[in-house]
Length: 555
Image (tube, rainbow, N blue to C red; front, side, top):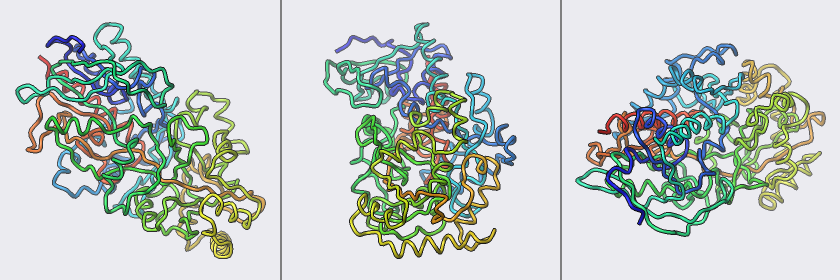
């Protein structure tokens, strides 16, 4: 076992993702020492944030105002609470975290990040447009601010801060250290112990070795758990799957690597921490099987505009308000009643060119690489390069000049004979007739036209309404959509200082949590639904809170 002394460090941070980097930087900024522990190698620093599109939820920002968006703290809080739908006794702390986070998003969040060099793309996106009710789920206005540099651009300021502290001797890295147990003495958490793993040079995201080379133990005055969620552990996802979302899917694609395994949840619970809302989770229904995967079963999410026709696996149209980009979990709940683990978008080349974006830093080389020339190519004819690559190589894409050919392809990619041409043609023709006037009884057509009232959508996000069977808009495209695992919305219960609580509601001395492992704050500040752009921000806010509180508690 590696030697240790009671003074190994002041604070041990378990997990080197965005929440962990933020917490460690805050600890060191306060003049305390920290050890940043992670089972992966240094090449994985930044965790899941590195792979993200870098979207951030901001309220009443200058970017919104420049785009003509009228937002306010009151409207954002209305949207958050309408989406969260808090209804449990254990929602006491999640509700307080939600209120504090909306305050942060409407307050110092942007200026705090900007002071570190963070910048955002000027066109604000409109994600998770909602369930059609003012008091219900969804964003009333666009709030999705994409980082210039995407996920790596979010990670960079915090990695820089941490590395400066490493150079100054205030932070120490302990990569390839897998925590298996929290050390308890006198009812307080005083350290961690586990196994050291052999060095691994695999690329970021790829499975690393689990061969053990020894044991270790580290002692400190506090431990902050920032180990992420359960999305890479499909068995655990299925065990946690709530009855309200139907039966768990037999097949899913992974939006996160396998090391997002949820281990620290059980380890923290064994030490006395309380897990709440384990049944709250966030999985997407627009997942693609990655034709060029980085991790096993790698899935990529389509961030769709509102125009694609959404069908279940048998060809039936999804009911309102389950349109592309509107109500993620409502759509998932509906699709779980169909008896199939996938659904379909039917669209045109004209739609894919303007409305398809792919989540992930590696799928957006222009934004990630801060390449203005490449970015400007998005307004030219043709879909973005990564989208076209999926169209050519992706196993879930069907491209055809005629509807008959499209249906034949859908039955090859899906299940033989499940889609029939005649009813699908009738459905599309009925939808297309609704475009003869500037008004319509079709709620999706109305939503498309409403979206184009927002300058940002009209400019780069929503195609001009047109008939799907118009040859000039073709070819026709069908995309098989898989369920993609992503985020954990419940987790370790914490108070507003990030202190983990026991089943009796008291703080567990010495233990803190931040990020996805505590539902991004309190054990589930999103409630049942998320408004998008809130995951990275939740890591930042909870990591900052826990880091500052743990540092202040050190003697």
